[in-house]
Image (cartoon, rainbow, N blue to C red; front, side, top):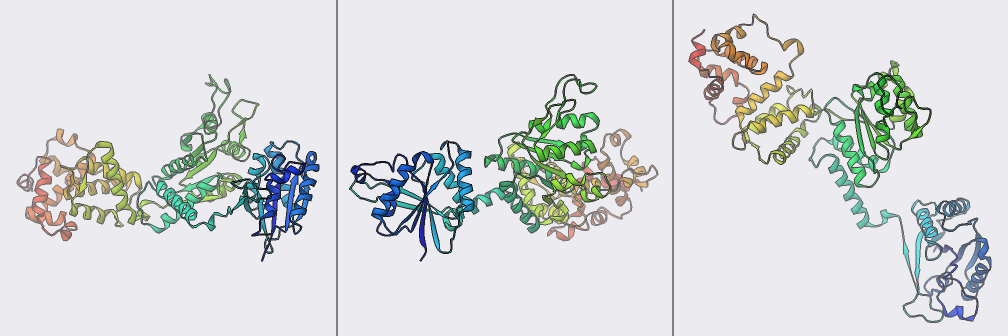
Length: 538
């Protein structure tokens, strides 16, 4: 069985008393050794030099009531017991040299006596395991009786030992992960593991973080959610400041980030604080950090490491204690090798680096994100829009296929769902709308060299045969190209049904009721066209 060692401060008030009457008073340092259910083998009684006489008296009284207890008087070099730094420093230094032996001894840290500062310091040292013990809180008896020991409570600050607390912490972590994902039930395992780790790091570290991923993958959105999570947990009190480094050029780059004095350069008519100072005690998100110039990179490195920097034109340093999140769509390792990015700055921001996958690499997350975007649209417009079953099936079939490039990632998806919801009829997104939207996306993702049609294209020439010039000029390039392709297919087909089978050959296999001719007829009617009018021009 392990022996018990109590560590605590002498109570200059609670432990005081010199005459015979002191034995009718509850004195916590003495009472702790009077409990019949346990024996204190040793007591480390901490005191300051001015209270040596009281410490010796308490030592003698403990020897009288508990001869089994060895009392070691420990003088600490504390001059002001309300000075946190002084008290903590003295306790920490003593603990560092103390021969703790947890295998054979239980250590009880008594916070009943001493100033509030001393009690807090003991608590912190126990929590950090610098003193490997439990907290002891003693209390007097309900009715004072000579020699009564009162009561005591032990508190273990190792939270992992408490199932309810551990469950609550786990739930808080789960809530944090859900918050970072905007409560979207994402299914991609790699992405979910990444967000779980980011939640842990965001809650425990103030070190820089680097988010790597293609444009539109959600770097800016995730950075803001991390800030909001930190603020909700009282880890930051300042603002979230975002800047795209690709927009910074010349003198304006350093001025925007670090500020300037009046007259620092031509056009500097007034003093400017700069975004780093604006982000003091908050979060600074530098998107596309790889676009920063060499001078700004050097200044940023100093600001990250030392929390101070020189504004342009100033010979006086300013301070800013910000947390940095950086974003880039480049491989900064290659930029370092090419000499375009400082190796020391990369090393400084590369402690926590996360590669965000693009939407095309998270095909299974497209469906829950569609539902999320429709819900957001409903909140903004106060109208609920939903897919018909067949329309939803067709849209997901395309969106999750290799043909869907999602080169703009979530920006493309957001725009696509917004178009569908805006153009829906009576709250329903139909299959015809989905087909039209797929055409828009395919046009959007066309290669640049395929965007402009040739003036000699037979389809373009055919379009002029069926529509007046002013109607063609009023059409978007997308609609003009799509309609021209439809006209070309129609003129090469024997009937309306034949043309419909060719145009809807993929989706028709998924439909229980097939009426390609009707779908094509309705599409042509949107432009005031008919099959007879087109076929007659062959």
